[in-house]
Image 1 (cartoon, rainbow, N blue to C red):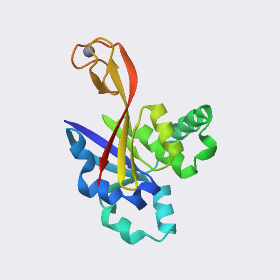
Image 2: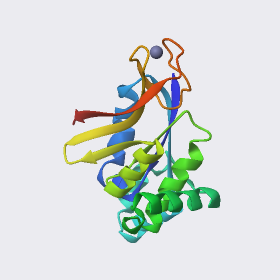
Image 3: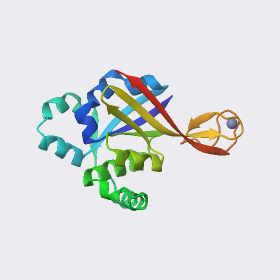
Length: 180
Ligand SMILES: [Zn+2]
C-alpha cells in the first residue's frame, strides 16, 4: 500500500477534479492506501477570478493549499528552459510543478492532474506521473522502470527491482485509459 499526493491545476479543478476526488478513480487503479490532494494559492486565485467558486467549494475542504519553495521554483524554471517549455508555462503552471517537486520529498508517489501539454511534458521529464481528463477519455501517464534482468515493471521511486533486486533498468512510459 502506498500514499499518493495529487497536485491539481486550474484546468483540472474546472473540468473534473470533483470526479477524480469523488469517484475514487485513482484509488481503484492501483493498491493505493491514502491520497492527499494539493494545489497552490495561485490556482485558487485563478478559480476565484473565473467565478466558479460554487463548483470548487464542494471539494475545497479536501484540498490542501500550499506555496511552493523558492528552491523548487528555480529548479522548474531551469528545467523548463532546457526542455523549451518555459514560454508555454504560466506562473501558475510553474507554481504547480514546483509544488509537485517539493512533495516528491515527502510522498512515495506524486501525480500532477493537468490538461496542459507543456505541464504534462515537463512532468514526464521530471519523472512525475500525470492524470488528464479530456472529454470522456481520461488517462494516467507514468514514467516507470523496467528491469533489464527480469522485465518486471515497477514505480520510479524504487531503487531496485522488487522481484529480483537488480538495479539495472530502462525507462518506459506507461499510459492507461479509462472511460467514464
Ligand atoms: Zn528484476
